Image (cartoon, rainbow, N blue to C red):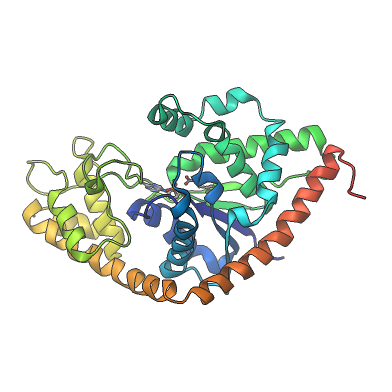
Length: 336
Ligand code: AMP
Ligand code: TRP
């Protein structure tokens, strides 16, 4: 039997932070040799809120370079840019026409983002999950490794696959394959440095709330120095009264590669004054190799272009076959 297929993506909006790395990309890297992988830079998603046209292309390249820098290996994985493959937009339209609008109106991320946009909520923002469903379904993906916040979008994707198969598939021959989310326990929800009850997010107005993958050691030190803590003595996991403490210890545990129990023992008696430099040094050391590789890749544009060209070619072959299958099932005529 061939390997199962994995698809995932990140939007080229703003710089990637530890939440993106620990919740998503690190997991892609860890599982990649067991699967056939497609990792896309979802630039069509990035325009669902007002965007800067001058920066979009460069941001997409930067995210692709970060995938490589974090350890995505071309022997197992393909990297491509979503908008380079027109089947994503086309399948979105076909899926739109079988998507009840109230499914979209109730999505958590839509409601959160819509509030931030005030009067200026684009149709694309409402339709965002359908585009994401198209990304996944086009590749007959078996697994979709993401952070916790994307679970609802994958449930919608599954509901749409069921709907398409019910309406247009044959009993023994479904049109679309049913994907499954792959969400790890540790790191699936990295919290803000300034508020342990909010997730770390690219769109938080305060830069102090997140550590970005390309932050300098000085910036990382500053952000950790200023991060929110509490007056209690000794550090511990899993105390609901101390969300910041849990979050920072979790970061330390994952970034240092130490088990939770080991960290719990190491930190049980220490205070913030001792812990913060420890976390700083661990974060700086964990990010250093990523930053070095990133600089190397960004310096060699022709290499990056060749990676994306090859990724596009592999992705396109699969995507266009799926699109044809859906169009045939839905009864479209073939071009003459
Ligand atoms: P985005 O930044 O929205 O494009 O998210 C890209 C990936 O990072 C998705 O798989 C998200 O689930 C994941 N992610 C984003 N923020 C966090 C966070 N604070 N903790 C864990 N995973 C996250
Ligand atoms: N919506 C995802 C996010 O914000 C990004 C995304 C778009 C995605 N298409 C996808 C993730 C397909 C996994 C699979 O994080």
